[in-house]
Length: 447
Image (cartoon, rainbow, N blue to C red; front, side, top):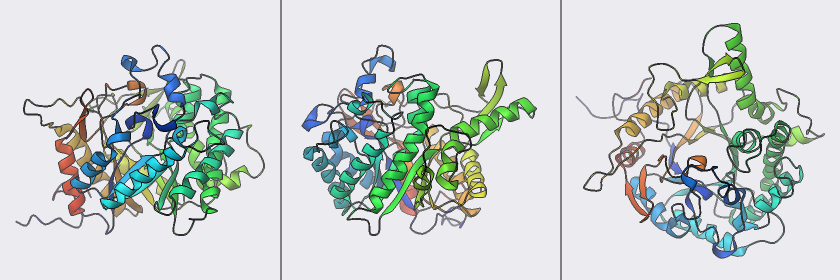
């Protein structure tokens, strides 16, 4: 019997395989080479804000070890690296003076990628707003969107000759909802009015940033997009109350960002919108990044809409249900509901309690199963007509997982934080073999 991949196991020719990180989660070196303070530097000093009192001060020391980490990625057979720029490294005050040492660092990161035949995918904003801008109002202030456009132009002018793929924002919903709504992320504000203003100004920042990138001196052959986190949202029961609850959650979590981006209108009224804003926000993009982790099951509770864990479904160490077909489901739903541009899965992964064996190896069969199931579901979505161009695992390295600190490990490479020793897990080797073959192991597809 042949071991050759079947057509249902293979991915389209030229499919991109990569891994993703975010600056504050991996870089450390928060005081190095003129970097300014971010809202996460401040938030980590709030008692009780971060599990274990952890901070990103050292993280994975990727600022100094980027060559080693990019080498690991390349040696695995992954051909793309999605990373983010720390805005405070480039503009310590969020505006005005440019820190050349910061730009020089990212030039070295890109050069290392290119030297290892790894394609850089650059995210301009992954949640680390300069504290100086938060002091002036942060994302609820309209001016922050214009400062982002200025920053985008600076980075593009410096790196646009060697970086082709650009992502304006990562998961603006988390920035707005967790940062200014629930307050569980930096800057830790709980205010519905500020949250809603932040929603619009983040989307405006995308539109203005896109305009700046398109108008830059390196604008030819650039591939520009944004990344949203999207999940299929389903009612817990068929009751009218649960159906209405699921609809509310879907609108507030997803349509609030998808509708203005792809349709030119918000699904609800936001008072911060000014004339011309929606035209900027809905300008054509070259791709949509999708971060997918889980299905969301909702019921109407006595004090509001509640997320429910489905019975009998395995969960990760952050208590997220593992339901791989949700990735196919959400992609097919988006394909039906919107005129989608090409899609990249810019994040997908799972946290498990990975413990090194006595010989130092790290076996993570649950993550292998997770990846195999989700990639099979992704392949099924491609077969159904969704134009998916690539897949980036979250994440390359165990790192600082925001409010969870260092307690949760999403990496395909284990990091011993006291020594900074890197050890590829079994999932890293598995994903590398899939990437090299551009196909799942024969028989694993659900198509």
